[in-house]
Every structure is written in structure tokens, then in C-alpha cells.
Image (cartoon, rainbow, N blue to C red; front, top):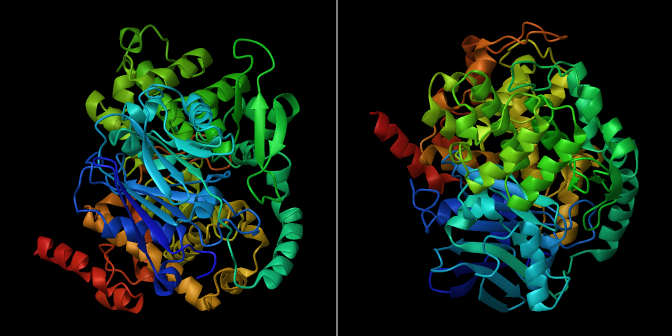
Length: 619
């Protein structure tokens, strides 16, 4: 077996039991890596209906097929999977940096962690040596302090660490995992799952080579790919970074502002990628094998937040900027930095604070609840302090640590009407009221409110469709995008590089060069569809119905008030048209359930019992 190690590491932190299992070429060819490995391993190693904080909810790390190789923008990516404490359905998050490559060099493709330690521990993987180490001295410390302490304790600054901060320890439902200081496996609350196991970190050191099947052919292809990565298809990421989206989204009236009260922000110029790069960016760097270098590191040079440093991307900038009515990049950078240190998802945390601000302005909470904070839209200092309150569950932060959905259920008073989440996961940086293909992608996304599983904003903003119109033909578009992204997240290839690839055939050729396993473009495309269906089966098993494929009330009731998208919203009739077209394209029932014949064609017949139980429960 090439590239893959073929090894799955199982660790029970309750009793310290460690064992290694293997997988074969058929498993690899069927599920590819990353997404496929993660969802397959999760559904096979977890009891239906389990609570996210149950010790038997497995926390899974899975590597991509090309991890550890010379393939650009792909050599160190990894996925993390578990049942989500936000959605109570599929939890998945992806990160990069250098951690993933280190795990493959250590000799593993998948880690499955179960149990709950009696006291804080961290997992130390040093090639074949796998140990649980005492973490009492780092429990309560930030992700940065944790990483630095572990490296010092083990005497090696090149050890790679994936850790939680106080957010994960406190079971904040939007807690994440941080590696390489600035990189986050951010969404769906998987840091809280790690915290529920009393597991502080996974530290890895590897010394094994990664061998590929056709090194000369791979080198030639990668040389070409590196040149493409330096071309026009990636120029945005190499120059301004993803923060370049701020002015673009604002001009097209799809910038979520003040908790979706607006779709344009009057202070957009002050939080734009242009302003960021001119005044705050001190370094641009890349991940292992990256030819793009999209990571824009910003430092605040003066003022209240002097010295604050963070990797700044569009989504957290949107969340802590326009979403909270804040037009100060110094505060945005500080809020992102605090999110990284405490180990909470910066996107979700910003969305939660924007929701809290509307609750404050509507009188649902007051300064007594907030510990004296005047939590109005635009209050930059209060915004940064709320990050800490949420991570540490202080004052009203204890309620908002449950996420937008959980907080709205506790607060009541009509707050559910402006709680911006899908399936319990907070919205991201696209106002989908005027992006109806994207609205469908969000509604059916397997991990809740999300743009990274489908990229369906592309056809809307690119002019391929009328973005203000709901049509059944959006179903095949979203399906194709989802299946394509499944392959990107299984290989795992950076989505910023998606413009450089020449379709499934080239990616399949790459797969064969690396692994030695024969693969055609069509086979790869079918594998993407297989993973989409397997994810759907998992969520159905955990209780998803058509009713769950929906959008926040504000998206469906409050039209965009201004800008080029003025008057647009997604009605229930719109959503039904979109869902019917999507389910039909997928070959599912009108309730969104995969049909047995489709599962058989996708080599998923072994999971037909899930849909059988679904039918029986309705009978």
C-alpha cells in the first residue's frame, strides 16, 4: 500500500487501552480518506442516538489520501469527526498547518478516541509509542500555552499539537481544536467533545517516510500544479487573502450585518481586506507544501488592543465586524486572537455575540446579566469581552455558551425568530436571502449552516443563475457541488486550489500516482456521491427529517431592506421548490430519504437498515 499507512489507531482514554487495526485497498478506494474515512468510521463505531458528551461518542481524526506527499495545498490537511454537540448530528471540521503530515509520518491514517479519563490527559503519539500523559498542569491553560508546554515537556519544538483551550474544557458547544498556533478545526463543537473526555491535546511526532506509487510522474504533475497555484486562479488568496470578500459581499448585498437585520454594512471599508493588508498584516505564510501562502497574519500596532495577533480570514472578520456592527479591525483581530486562545470557533462565537447584542437591544437581557457590559451593536470593547465570558461561561456567557439555538431556547421572549442557525450550527458569511442556490445548499448541508460543504454561492454570485429566483434546477447544481467537495475533503485538497484542477479525471490520475490504486474520474465522482449519501444516512439515523432541512425564520420572513438585493427573501414556497428539485436529483424520496436501489448502486446496501427503520417508525 502506497501513501496510506493502512493503520487505524484506537485509544480508550478511560483505561489507557491502545490497539491498532488495519484497512485494505478496497476500503481506501471506496472511501478515499478525510470525509469518507471519517463518516464511515463514525457511523460504524457509534451507537445510534448517543449523546455528544457520552464517553462512547468517538472523536475521530482522519487524513486525506495525499497527506504527507509533495502535492501542493494538500500535504498536511486533516479532518475531525464526532457527533456534534451543536446539531446532535454529524460533526466534522477540517484543519491544516503541519499536524496532519506528522500523523502520517508517525504511521497512522485514522485515530479513534473513546472513553473519558479520570483526570486530564493528553495523547502522545511518537511513531509506534502511544501513551496517555498527565495533563493536570496544562488543564485551564490556553491553546498556545498548551502547545508550548507540551513541546517543552517532551523536549522537541517540532512536535505537532492539536489542543483545546478553556472553551473545550468548559464544554462550550462551539469549542474547537487549535493546531500550529493559528489553525482551527473550527466548526460543530468538536473541541467540547474532546473536553468531555478530559483530553487536552493530541501531540504527534513521526519519523517514517511516505512512499508514493509513481514518484517521477507525481513530481512532474506537482511541478505543473505548483505553477498553476501561482497563477490568476489563486491571486485573491495570495494577495489580500479571503478578507478580499468583504467589499465584494457588501456590494452585492449579501453581507450578514447586525444579526441579519441588514445585508450591507456602512463600515465595510474599515474592515476590508484592503484596509487590513495596508495597516495590520505583518506576514503572509503557508501550510506544508503550499504554493499559495494565503495565511495573512495581522498584528495590532497601537491602542487598546496593541500586540493582538491572529490569522485573519473573511468569515471571522464578518462575524466580529459587520455582524456585530463593529468597524474596528483592531477589535476584530483581538476577538479572533481570543477565540484561538480559548479554543472557540471564531465564526460561531461572533454570530453568537451578534445574536446577544440584538437580545440586549430588545431588552431580553440587560447589563445585570452581562456583568455590566453595554452589549449594543458596535460596542467593540464589549464584543471582545464577551468572547471571554462565553469561553469561561461567566455571567450570561454561560447561556450563550450553549450556542445560538440553545441560548434562544433558554431565553425565549421571541428570540427564536432571530436566532440565526441551521440544525443548531450558526450561520456563516453569506446572506442567503438573495442567494437562492446557496440557500438550498445551506438548508441541506450535512453539518448545519455551512458554505464549505457545497460552495453553492458560486453559481449565484458568478451569474450562472438568477440568484433571486427559486427553481428546481438548483437541485442538480447543489448535488454536483456537494459531491465534488466531498472529494476535495477526502483527498484532502485545499478548496482555495479548486480553480487549478482539470476535473475529476486529473484528480483521479493524481490519486493513482500517489496510492497505486487504479481510479477513473467517473469512479471518483461516484465516490463523492457515496459520501454525500452516507452522511445523509448518518443524520437520518440521528433523527433528521425533511423538516430539519430548513432556514432561519428571519431568512424566510424578513426581506433584505436595502442594496441590489432589496426585497429578496426565501419563502416556504421557494424552499419547497428547491428541496423537491434537490431530493429528485439525488434519487431520494420527497422526504429526503435515500432509496434502497440508490444505496445498492453506491455500495451502501449494508446501511439500508437505517432507512428501513425510518419507514417503520412512520408506519
